[in-house]
Image 1 (cartoon, rainbow, N blue to C red):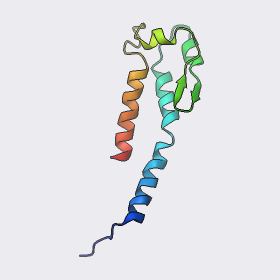
Image 2: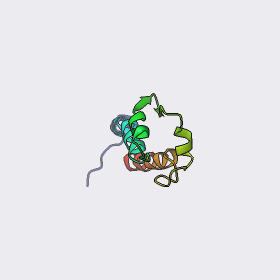
Image 3: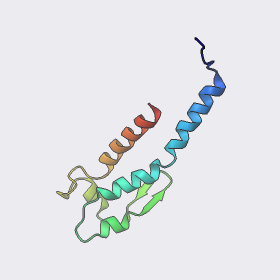
Length: 95
């Protein structure tokens, strides 16, 4: 039976691979956020098109109201479900 030697270089390569898999998460989070944004006339979905660093920027004056569960279409708002989505994805990637 042969054993694979585990050292810093093996661990480093594995971590780098996992970290690269995290790169698309901001875009995936944005897509999820938009997908659960309530629709009335479509302004909220159209106006939630911006990612600034780690922030999804919703450029409409009633964003906080929708996020607090005002709409029956999204009673939990959009932020908390998006955070749950991200946690699940990170657990899948990092194990």
